[in-house]
Image (cartoon, rainbow, N blue to C red; front, side, top):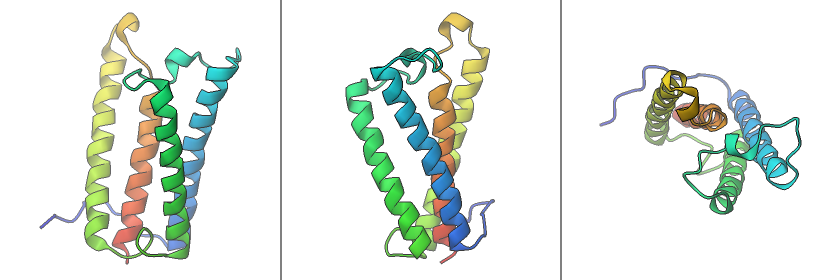
Length: 149
């Protein structure tokens, strides 16, 4: 049996949906910003090398991000309307998502510390770390919404 998460957000479904929508919007801005940089390279945005770690070539990363946006949109809609199966009570699934968000965020904390402690020439990129925290927050809020029933 999975232990109860130590921190659970308890708000109405419409508030959870609003928070999820804001987090989705932030992620969409990241994806759009990355597309703009890849196609136009404006001076007012960081160069492409700062937008992703290169672990996944951009030609594969972009479709993956688009799939995430589509799925996240379904989650926001489901939580807002409390539709099965993504938006209504499943306390066990909610607990798994919350614990998963903790692990995900902890991984990004470790990555951020490594970034901060590394010499500038070995530092890596910060933008993906920030947006992985956005995704971890999304998973956390979604898990909390499911826990409430």
